[in-house]
Amino acid sequence: MPEPAPIPLGRSALAALVELERVSQTYPLSTARLGAALTDRTDVVFGLEEDGELLGYAILSRLPFDAELQSILVARQARRRGLAVALMEAVIAQAKAWKSERLLLEVREANAPAITLYRRMGFAEDGRRRDYYPSLDGAGREDALLMSRRLDGA
Ligand SMILES: CC(C)(COP(=O)(O)OP(=O)(O)OC[C@H]1O[C@@H](n2cnc3c(N)ncnc32)[C@H](O)[C@@H]1OP(=O)(O)O)[C@@H](O)C(=O)NCCC(=O)NCCS
Image 1 (cartoon, rainbow, N blue to C red):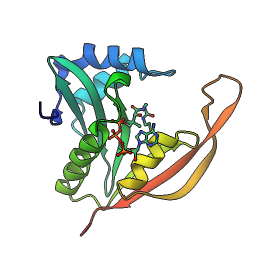
Image 2: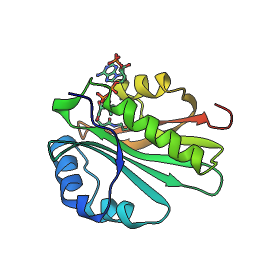
Image 3: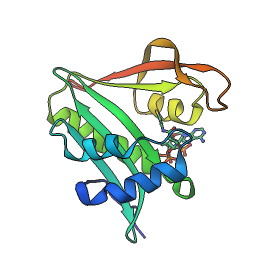
């Protein structure tokens, strides 16, 4: 069976997004944040569905000159199938369509799977924010890596 292709999600996807976050994340995005992403004119939410089930999503925000990846997630049972690459390709295509100069993102410094994905997609590290995230074990704080990828002519 061919892999699902990313599609822009609308308001009707809110419950599925909330549930995917709830079962997948230590610190899930709030219902309000997800609802705003689905309705704000400056955001696009891409989703991947298979047999009526939401397997992954990515939120992209349009900034004045750049675009920013706010979130990307693939359900545990669907990882290592290339679905995050497909979501990133949709995100990059949308940011290029907006004529954004760069695509920006922040990632926990210990998130090796995501950092490997981003490097593979052409992102480089620009800097870090010290103690930006609460650590996943709840015991302290964790740095955020700031990464970006140019979009013009790339
Ligand atoms: C990061 C995440 C989105 C990757 O999703 P995925 O669909 O499994 O990724 P893909 O199958 O498209 O993998 C693409 C490449 O990324 C890298 N990668 C992905 N998962 C990896 C892992 N666990 N370890 C090492 N590299 C990994 C590999 O280079 C992989 O290519 P390969 O499978 O050919 O080796 C997924 O692990 C996830 O949802 N994590 C939790 C949420 C999260 O951390 N989001 C990022 C927040 S900034």
